[in-house]
Figure 1: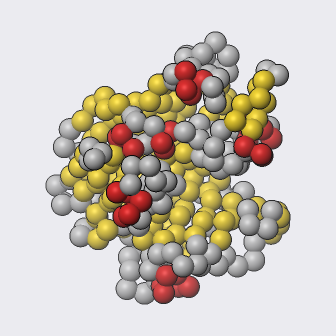
Figure 2: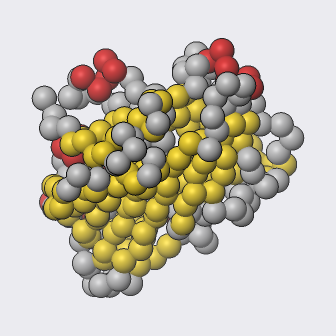
Length: 273
């Protein structure tokens, strides 16, 4: 069994986090409502890839072309969304409403991502809002790419997904299903894998239909949001990423490079509207 750490605020909101399971934020109850979807059988299986909660995407978000990238003449392979979500994180600080965890480079990570780093994840729940941050410090001698994301699964019954709406000013998107890029007409949240390329706001609101309070997200450090859902699933994912999928291979101009000794951070907060 994986250790579950519970954080609580004074309003009875609480969060469950599994540090040894990729620092997964498995559950978030706000004002008596379970905000996240989680695949319970997968959560119970220590070897399964969990759909649910907030998986941490690091040191890449999305897929690399053919699962590989080049650096200084060498080829490196990495699975979709990187390795952080499958690694055990070490708890560095814990109190009733706040948790900090760390992940450091080792021989296994260097075989996939040839930079020495220290990643830090922090979660807190205050006044009904969940705040999370993912930062990385470059402990190497050359600039290190910072490509990460949060992958929250918001609970919405499939019967209600046709009423769901996302607040965005984006006008162009990359459709990861068709592999095409173009203007946005209407966003159907029933089933999609859509990367909004020019969303300029530092957050969004997910409207979940009549009788359900909207979910308000705010973030810093993201350059795009990814919307993902499956038609027969009871969730919609709204994911802030620091760069486009495949950025380590494609040379995305929005990819952040961290100088030796410096750090970069992606942060997000979630609350009911």
